[in-house]
Length: 314
Ligand code: ATP
Image (cartoon, rainbow, N blue to C red; front, side, top):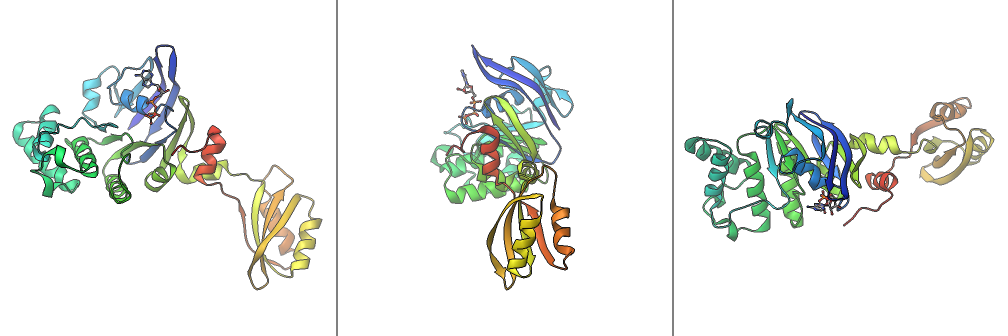
């Protein structure tokens, strides 16, 4: 659905994008995650054709969007960080107008406005002037405008910024429900927003892609195979003895008794390779039961810090 190849953007002597490449498949909800200034808006503005690239390529639905921007734009809907809303129009007037700007005939635009107001729960506000709407409703109008014309690809720049907690929950649900019928790319500098909505994540840092993967995979890949959690049933002293005598264990510590005679340990491996099978066998040989042995997972926040060396910005 979207292929971005080696995008470079210089603002004067400042290199905002330093060769960004990634791809997004149909139906995915992808989060562009990065601190302020990482290059999220610049990337989105180039994909949507609002900004030219210094070099690189963007393909939308197989169309080279830098060479044929008009054609490519038919496949995308864009919610910029500050949507250009006409404050003196009513919701309905504005959405109809947006349809006409996208090349729809008057009747089609009217019909389309109706449809997108239904999709974004705006029907009750259809005759309200945009300037009289709350921030949350204005954001919905921005989203509705992006949906006009049923574009398969939606690009949403910081869609949750400035919303209150209830409005954030509504917006999240709205985006998740769009996931079934659209491919969605949204940007955010807030990990929890991305984690709760997106099934794929692209981490941008200082104009470069630091990681790109399924949300789940990212923490798995970046987890340390040397740190394990072991839950085993048996006599505490005997478990300690086995762990002490096992040569591929560097260190271990008891976390606690999770049930009667069931103990949880943190184990640090002395080897690079995965020791889970061998550890299991150490206990099985002595007829002791291992309930679980897992590699310790990093949270998305820990992964972000590990990859970028920075804390999440609030
Ligand atoms: P934010 O969430 O703050 O918008 P971002 O990740 O979207 O951050 P961009 O807005 O893409 O980041 O900016 C990337 C870098 O390019 C930043 O260092 C920014 O200062 C710089 N930049 C952005 N727009 C311009 C411009 N028009 N002229 C000069 N530098 C710019």
